[in-house]
Image (cartoon, rainbow, N blue to C red):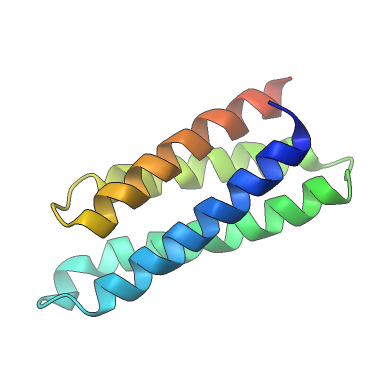
Length: 107
């Protein structure tokens, strides 16, 4: 995967996490969604930052990619614990993003 494609994927992951975050806030039992909400926000933030780091071709991009992969994986795992559609979709997008960031971090 090329760097430009990964930047697009990171932007998609951030947007998906933000949508999941907003949908979780509208769930009947928001307290049950607290960890999901926290990780959605962290994942969206690190994906946006990592996309910017890649666009600048920073010498530290591997470090950001590795951290991004870790946080995307955590978000995917948490979203996987919930049955609603927005969490299912977010989990899938985060899992793919974690895999691709991890591959690029060691490339």
